[in-house]
Image (tube, helix red, strand yellow):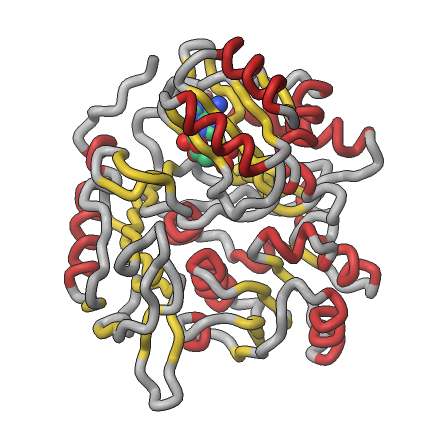
Length: 414
Ligand code: AMP
């Protein structure tokens, strides 16, 4: 199988490792990729959101499968363009990707499919915003109604800050606050059949103890020892299958990766958000535990044959990833700092670049993801933090409490 992977972040490096390890993959090409991905794939420098360029490359290399990592190409219709050429593509159509692209559309689908989620209002005027904030009270949840790379949400007790965010966004969804620990569940689907991966948890706030501003994600772990029994089956029945059925009913079936972000509330699991692609950095830990060959699984979803795909196999044990972020992230991250010690297994490149003279430097806010497995969460944490200790990056910071509460049995359900 010849596989073309689109994207350049930590998620794509994790996908590249999984795809390259599949014995049926004879060639892996990544566009544009990054220096970590370059160790397992041939890189081609094209814009992954440029549908024509992607189609031309997929045809040139006679790709048997195109895997789309990030959301921007999906919303731009790259999957549609590749599919129109008869090439199997893992990633939903532009219309189906609106489950992520528009918070208001996602709410509409959830309402129609009777999926448990937070009550919400779509608001555009200051009067609508004020009425919605009054209705729900603090903490306020204000979401930009558009693609914001996971950073368009403000959760705050500060009424003025909530109103400011709404005014800056123009069109927002304001919703009820859901109290309870969060779970990320990835579901591989061909539009009809659906296969859940292991639930994972990520860490959105920049600081230990969930303090400071929101980020793209500072770490993750899997599996989750604290989830109620039957959680995944319940989410498949109450959330995933009704959502897929509603998307089919509308003539816009969702095929690809449905990312279900949940809060485990006192009333059971409720959807916080849908994404139309693998989450970053949860992908790094989930794929670290997946033993089933990845390209075969994604190709089954891309060709509508998931129903006959064998059940997934998982490693025993746990995986932890710790994000090493650049100075000043998430505000205005400093880039161009030299990185050493990154050429070891388990160091996943998220925002790195090679200079003309061959040095590895930071090129984004989230720079590396130190990813390790172990017999349990404690062992995986220890191994992941040992990887962090082996890296140097001036001014970098990372959380020290990734997976700690879970490892110590301190996560309680409401
Ligand atoms: P989203 O982009 O919708 O995932 O939101 C980013 C983060 O904001 C989520 O991971 C949650 O931590 C938080 N969040 C979003 N919506 C809610 C909600 N209704 N209640 C509580 N927290 C929320």
